[in-house]
Length: 196
Image (cartoon, rainbow, N blue to C red):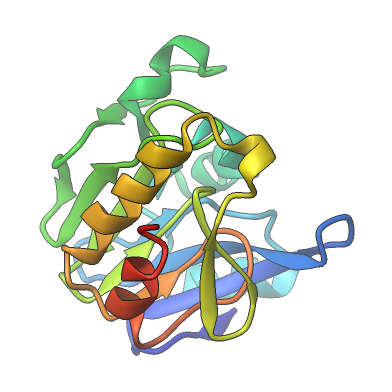
C-alpha cells in the first residue's frame, strides 16, 4: 500500500482498463481499530502490510457498486461491515451497521449522503474534518481536478451539483476518490467548482 498525505492514511489500487482510471481502497489507521473504505482485492503484499498496520476493525462501503472485496477483507480480518442505509433494500447481504446522513461510525468518521448519483443513499466519509473519501459521484479522471460522475450515469444532475456544494461546506482540504486520482489539497475549491 501507498502512504497518502498523512501518516495515518494509506491506499491501494487496481487499474480499470475500460475507464483508464484506478479504483482505490483506503485505510485509516487508528489505535482503536483500523477502518478500510471500499477495499479492492488485496495482493499478498498489501494484505501483509495491512496486517502489520494492525488489521481491520471496520470495512465501510460507500455504495452498492463499490462492494468490491468488502466481504473477503472483512472475513480475513474478522471485521464488521458498514454500508449506506439508503441502499439497504438492494444490498446483497446484511451489514453490521447501516449509515445515513450525519451518522458517526467511530469518533472522527462521519458519513454524509449524496444525491443524484447512480445509486441511492451513496455515502461520502469525512475523516477528522480534514479528508473526504468519496464513492462514485465525486471522482478524478485526471490529476489535480475533480469531476462528477458522467451525465449519462447521473440520476439527477441538479441534486449532484447540490451534493458537491454540501461537501464543499464541510471544509475538507483533501479528497480521496474511489475512482481516479486523489486530491491532497484544494478540496473545497475543487468541490465548489462542481456546484454548477
